[in-house]
Amino acid sequence: SGYFTFDPGFTSTASCESKITYIDGDNGILLHRGFPIEQLAKEASFLEVCYILLNGEAPGKEEFSKFERDIKHHTMVHEQIHRLFNGFRRDSHPMAVLCGVTGALAAFYHQGLDVENPEHRRLTAYRLLSKMPTVAAMCYKYSIGHPFVQPKNKLSYAGNFLHMMFATPAEEYVVNPILEKAMDKIMILHADHEQNASTSTVRTAGSSGANPFACIAAGIASLWGPAHGGANEACLKMLEEIKTVEHIPEYIARAKDKNDSFRLMGFGHRVYKNYDPRATVMRETCHEVLNELGIHDDLLEVAMELERIALNDPYFIERKLYPNVDFYSGIILKAMNIPASMFTVIFAISRTIGWISHWIEMHEEGMKIARPRQLYTGYVQRDFKSKL
Ligand code: CMC
Image (cartoon, rainbow, N blue to C red; front, side, top):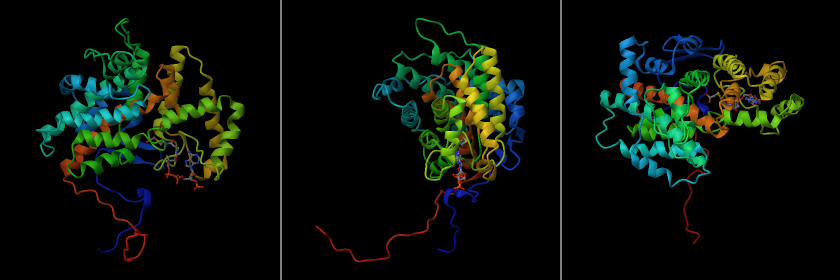
């Protein structure tokens, strides 16, 4: 009853209050708990950013050591989860497997879990943060027919993930510090982004009081789409398809053609009408990593030229379309030997802290079930007569 506004895609509706992340899209500013993303990417580790997102303040030494210990306590997954994997096809997309397995964790952490209890919520956050890299690496190992690699808690968060991805029983994997640092930075840049589609999905699912592991699985489902987290995989595929700078104009023309559904992947954003500050850091990181590894990748040239042409084209200027976080991330991940199908999985590992911080904030603030209204455009009332 009463009036309500019609706002498809929620372009102008705030669904909640939040103290976690601030975005000024016109000026390309992103702050987590007030701290600029550029400073966090330069000076903090991913786990430190997790602490900040979760607790609102930067940790002192002791607080951080305890946090790190608590997280590492939960890196293993139940043996039954190992068996669960056998039900999936080996050629399944890892995002499908990640979504299924994360949802299945609800079956392991449900009885006795009281979402109203702050301690239970904290434990849930630790479990999710710890287990996500383990499950993600298992998705990869399963797809290539390798045995799962157990977590090694003496390694860093990013280092442990790389270890579980690339170690084999036959060969010890020595984590390259350049790759470890780059992975950590990629994780920081994806950690949170206020009420994006997947975070809103987690909040919506959680607003009914649902199991948090199931809510995170819902977030993973939402993240998978190419308009959201799936853009990093789609962007690398696009760059590979473009292949050489000569082909760029053809793709720019397609992106501008309203009769063609093709869009430039890694370009444009609902909130940023300026350069995505995460993309600036990602581009720098991309150059650094390739330089340090001594890799030359033609795709980086294609990406830079594509960016240059697009940013000088009236179509992109008028619509304020700039590269977003996913434009350069794929080139870095490729240099790390990570297959494109795992890119969005890595986004999901990183965004888990954002999802769970919002889920906790929602519970702390006291929530109302998410229940949007609609404009009904169907039949007026009519009489039913069976056609059978
Ligand atoms: N290539 C070509 N045209 C575009 C693009 C693009 N990548 N993005 C937007 N446009 C055009 C769009 O066609 C529309 O033009 P017109 O006004 O003539 O109809 C105008 O720009 C506004 O676009 P919109 O679809 O109304 O904007 P939106 O806010 O609904 O969509 C978006 C935002 C990110 C879904 C969209 O820009 C897009 O599809 N980008 C490509 C996918 C991508 O890179 N996604 C990753 C987002 S950042 C990572 C994350 O947080 O998930």
